[in-house]
Length: 373
Ligand SMILES: *Cc1c(COP(=O)(O)O)cnc(C)c1O
Image (cartoon, rainbow, N blue to C red; front, side):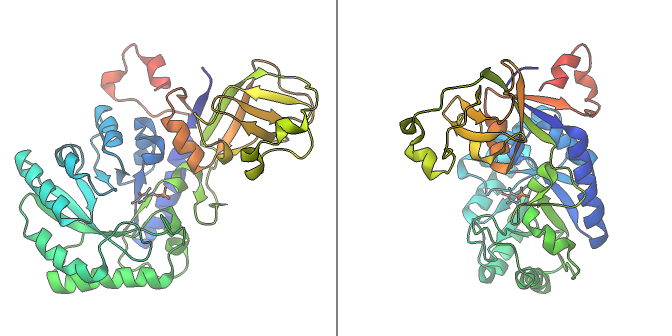
C-alpha cells in the first residue's frame, strides 16, 4: 500500500451507523448519511446504507455525481442550496435538494420539466444558526408558492444548528422548529414528509430524555465517520473513533543537533503553539504536509510531539527510539483533517476491514482495484 494513505475501516463505519440508527429509531428519527467529508466516496456511502441509513446527502454536486457514477441508486439529497448554474445537474442526479431561494426553486422546476422529472424540495428554515435559511415568518408564503409550482414537489422542512455559530441547539429552538412544522401543516395540509432536525450536533438533544416532537430525520456525517459529537468534541458512547487512519512514511530520522534558537522562532509556529520551548533531539521527518491535510487536526502517535510542518514535510519529535527510515507513522484525524486529506490528490484511500460486496459489474478481474479506490 502506498503512502500517504487513508485506511478506512468500513466495518466500523457500518457499525457506527447501526448504533445511531438503533438509538434514533425508537424516537421516530431516521438517519441520512452525509458523505461530504469523504468527497462522496462510494464505499463509505455503501457502508452507511448497509448500516441502516435511509438515504445519503452531500453538499456538492460533484460528490453526488461520483456516487451515481459508482452505481448508487439510493436517494441522494443535495444539502447545500443549489447554484443557479447547476439546476440541470441537480435534477439529474439528486431526488431532493435543500433550498432557501425561490429563484433557485423555479430554476429547478424548469430543469425538472426539461428533464422529464419531478424534483423534491426541502425548505431550510433559519432557526438561529445564522447561516442559510428562510426566516420562519416567510416560510408559509414560500411553501404555498412551491406547492403550486409544476416540476417540483415539496418534501419537507429542515434546519441547521451549530454550523456557523458553533452553538448546540437548545430545547426551545427545537420545539420552536416543531411548532413551525405543525403551523405550516395547519395552514397548508399534511404536506411535510420530512422534518429534518439537523446534524451530529443535534444528537445530545435527540438522545436526551425529552420528546423529539415532529423531527423525523437527522443528517449525520461526523458522528458516523468519527464517532464524535462535534460541539463538545466528545466521543459518543459505544462508537468507533478510529474508522479512519492517516498513514505516512518517515523520510529522515535520527538524532539531530539541538536546533538553534532562531530556527525555532518561526512566528507562525510560535503563534500556533507548535514550536517546542526546548529542542527535541530525536526528530523525524514524515512525507506529508499542509498540502495534504490540516496538520493541527492530527492526533500524534502516542509519545510523539508535533514540532512543525511545511507544505510537504511534517516534523515530529519522539522521546525514545525514533522510527526507522521507511517505516510508517499512523495518525488519527479530526473532521477538518479528514475532510482535507480525503480531497488531497496524493493520498490514496485504502479500504480495510471487511469491505462490502461490490456491485456485480465490477467484480471480474478487478479485485485489486476494488480494494484501493
Ligand atoms: C455537513 C452538513 C451536515 C452534517 O453535519 P455533521 O456535523 O457532519 O453531522 C448536515 N446538514 C448540513 C446542511 C450540512 O451541510
